[in-house]
Length: 497
Ligand code: ADP
Image: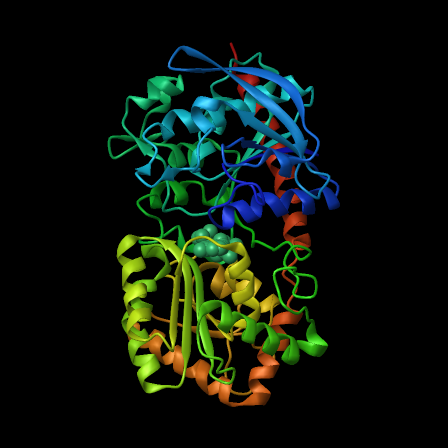
């Protein structure tokens, strides 16, 4: 089985969130279960050529936006420290920038054209590299028009046989543009309808993908059910219900070699299950020093590593945090960036409570790793969470997650209840601040019982979050998609006059 994964970000070269992690780790796991998985991603201006190792110009491909020809180069390399072939789409005008989707001035105004190029290049790349995929595996809205591009190919074109799998990592981001973008896409006008690319008078790239892809996956079983109802469907309920038979929830894994407290070079001390207590104590000391918080190692440390976005429920947390630290002997640290209002809210809570609260605004993977190792409780109060990776990293590093029962959080954290031996974290229901506050208090109760705290910690570390089972499920999904695509093509041919 040959599969080309197409993604706007791929870790460790480019990443704004979980999508980058998945695009970096899944292809490695796929290759281990016998899939010839390769990755196509843009060559951004911030990617350090030194980090790429050996590269080769694999040729150039011709693309077209609204009838205007564009030429892009393909740089072939390997995903760092792996055997995964990586093709970097080099189009300086579109991608030689410091951001993936945006910069300090907001979203790039030409994101429609930039990502149409990426979506189209999935069809053009294989002949340039002399390799024919069975499946195009598209990730999120930026490349969600690729399945429509496949369906628009003339009937004699051999590429029509390629199946497409669209993975939705976050339904909130849909790639909505004015109708005029249809002409830029060069897709047939009949694709622009309510069972296709049109939504509320605009061109909706993700909706187009949902209607045109052979199979659709999303990143947890619970989220795959949630998105068939509002408010989780973000307006696309009808489309998702229509495709329900082809919609599959596959939980994300993590790269267990890259995220291992026993080898992580960001940590002052490495540790594994037998020496977790000593290891985490050393890491906590180091973390408190880095954050400028007092060396009170016995004080429970809650923390967040996140995009600061409405989705993540961090406004709710900001509202209960002052009460948490006034009622209890607890400390808190935040690492994140995004919404300026949330940035300033957390900064001001930290200014008012310098001995208890630290707020670091920015994106800093090394500090994130120190937090996973040195913190006691990761807090994830998301309104919705397709999968979530931070709770998986937390558990792997012996940190207890406190999460809302939604999406992948519900699927990956085993809730603590008195007497429940397999628990790995605190899971709470309800969207309100009060429910969150009670969950944080429950965490403190667990913290006070050394035996329970230690059991949850160890259970989390023992959890298998590896990619292998999910990679096998993707491999099966690819086979189903190929079968289904061939049936569709045969049917079309039978119907030909
Ligand atoms: P999402 O994809 O919605 O952002 P996930 O939990 O799936 O959420 O993935 C987030 C990823 O981004 C994790 O690897 C997390 O550690 C990382 N991350 C988020 N914010 C930061 C930050 N400010 N600094 C470093 N890493 C971050």
